[in-house]
Length: 107
Image (cartoon, rainbow, N blue to C red; front, side, top):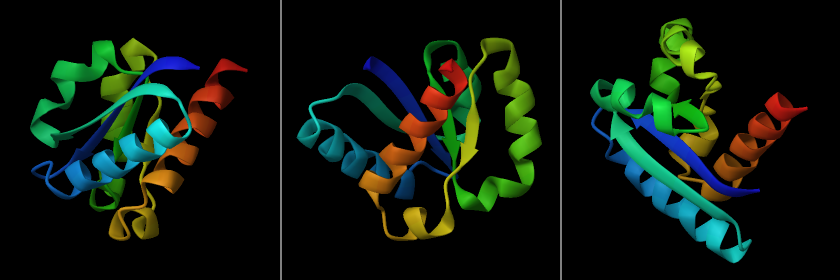
């Protein structure tokens, strides 16, 4: 699995920025080639055509269907980041969730 692009979405991209950084560190340890970026919810549309998965902050869980509708034309899965993963800035668990969802879609 190479060159995967993961986009994290939150309010201003701050908390998710730390989470993205931790996920990149985990990917490096695992020798995975991927790109994890964090952006504000206002920028999601600009990235949908170029990503493999969209992961939204738990505070956007109630808007999951909206993001799924936006991502559908691009065949991009959307996942709500679990609260514990988000709160702990757990890049390892985040990466596990993303890779599982991407593999699930390919099979």
